[in-house]
Image (cartoon, rainbow, N blue to C red):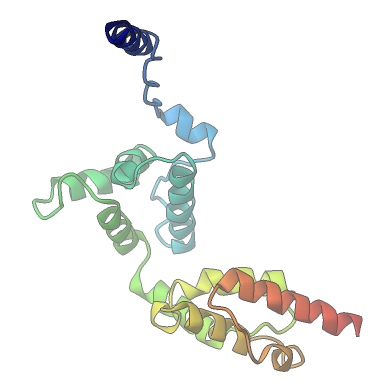
Length: 204
């Protein structure tokens, strides 16, 4: 009886190995894949307009993340989108002996911003953040502006609590007292609470 059971077990194991489906082939990411998913080329010919460069690097990072491309491969695919002056910049930087090989995304992001987003621009944006108030903006408009400018003042929003407090204290004066205490350390949850408080206030 025992040998029969053993034979059956071995036969089942053999069948399982024989009929096991092959592993899926890795997805091929091409330049066309990037373009079809919203990636844009960057020419580097409008260096006097750093906002264009900032929007490009942020948008490119988002496309690569949405495609689930590993972070280690981000520089390779981002560099495929560089054209003309921007590609010449990439070649010069790549030939520099101080450039890490292979490129890391942290280095690509830093080097790109150093070239196309000058310190003066970042300082101006930081000043805008410091002066930011909700004013006449709707809550969604204010949130969008806050999130955009906060990246230029990382020391002011280094923790979730700091980010929530900076957002709260810049709200309209009539709304601010209704959210003086926010019992959450999650920015999205805090925003939802503020949005509810604003709705309750408008319904009152």
